Amino acid sequence: MSLWQKDKAFLFVLSVCASLAGVISIFIFFFLAKESVPAMAGIGLSQFVMDETWFASENQYNVLPLLWGSVLVSVGAVAFATPLGILSGLFCHFYAPSAIAGFYRSMVHLLAGIPSVIFGFWGLVSLVPLVARIHPPGPSLLAGVIVLGIMILPTIMVILDDAIANLSRLYLNSTVALGVSKWGALKGLILPNLRKQVGVSILLGLARSIGETMAILMVCGNVVRFPTSVFNPIRTLTANIALEMPFAMNVHRSALFFTGLIMMVLVAILMSTAQTRTSRQA
Amino acid sequence: MMVSRQVLTRTSRIRASRARLQNRIAAAVIWGGAIFVAALFAWLMADILWHGWREISLAYFTQEPESAGRLGGISSILVSTGLILIVCLVSALPIGLGTAIFLAEYTGPEDTVSRKIRLSLNVLAGTPSIVFGLFGNAFFCKMLGMGFSILSGGLTLACMVLPYFIRIAEESIRSVPQSYRMGAVALGLSKSTQIMRLILPVAVPGILGAIILSVGRSLSETAALIFTSGYVDRMPESLYDSGRSLSVHIYDLSMNVAGGDQRAYSAALVLIVSLILINFITGLIGRAWSRRMISIS
Image (cartoon, rainbow over all chains, first blue to last red; front, side):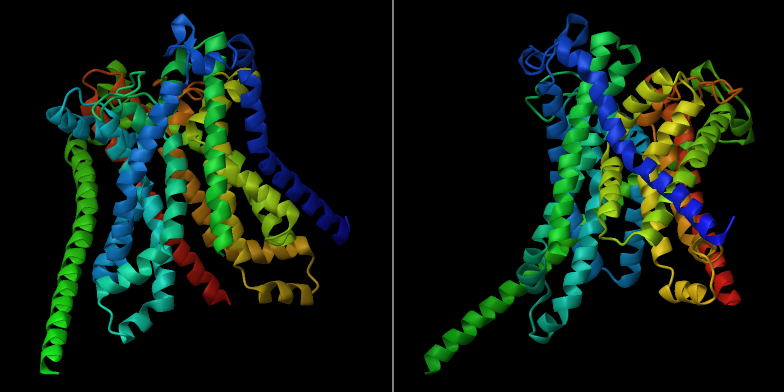
């Protein structure tokens, strides 16, 4: 084999790998779509929003309570985590001595590596009893919001940490030279310029929370309903799949794939919005 | 004249004291937020450590679980976890490395091909793990007839970690200095030799990092495994057997087994410690390798 042929074979192998890796997401999408055809044909799209509730054994397939549960817990988690993320970013750059900032960053790094099942377990044994003491039953929207909020905090903080680093490199010296107070600089300069990155981190946080399964499944109580208070148990789309997949058959199974498809599309939209925002900035 | 100056100093004094107050409040809030986060983290870690270490002994690692995991150890679960991990890495590594080399060495960051592949990989990276579980169940378990097995689980995980692996591996290959490539071209090395003998060895620490990240992701994953590799806690005899991973074990003990909390704590501790250890060891290996590369050059 000549050198030229060897190079050609090498490139061929590489492009096979690349195309294989490139088509997986498309393949998954079409596969989910194919699996959800029986549900769309057998149940019909109208039933997915018109049925009374989601109760598979009575052929009730309304996804709205599940979707609402997913949205509520995700929005709650982002509302919990974003302020803490901003505070953490400011803390590391402007308030903490560098040793503490380093320690804090590695702590957040560790937090990011903790599996969701452990967050769920911790929520179940530590947080849920605490919530129950405030207001029974305990497994609730609130517990889900807190656990999920802690889980997405690293995602949010890492983005903001980088953004603050950039901003302070650009402007901080001039504000110090002007004699602006620390809080004055943060309020007048850093925070307003951070708005875009906060938006991006919120989108990514939402994408991450919508897809989260285990922690939510373990702390939210999994009752299909529209909650009226934060102490009500809820069931999300993801938890519903995890709960019903083991025994789902035929149309029911297909309906679960349909909800999976909804989620994949939802997350893809959130992620791509976040990405176009990031690239527009650069 | 006097009056206006007095007024001026008074307002500026008020303004200065207000600024000082705002400064203090801001500092208090920011410190408070940071301490709150640190306290949550400490609570979580202390809780798992405190309850987890009690039942851990040598026997815990060498015995099989009994009575749904309430008694006995986790030997079969560790074996299953390891096998799932091996299947995942063996299938993800070659494809991922090939893709990373392709993207880094044969395409620019803004080429149409690489942009499309990267977009597709980003979608894959964002896909919720439970969706991978659905896909794995329908494709590997049902359509390819692998059933609930370690093989199905490992392959599902491979799809999941691929985008992360590729992203880091590509970055590390790209960051190899351009002068190395020029030197190789000047010596008349073929492109493939150049990549295999020069670029990849230099990029090893980064690729190692990518592998470790994939291992970490796989160890942490639960939702994608529940209905691909399944729940069975017996010692697996082949890759076609169902095997329960450590993360699924924690889930099952805490949710489905009454009185399983204590053992769930132990399993959680084992999982966390191994994740931390893996991170730590990679740091060491990466540093040692780059030192060696420096001493060679």
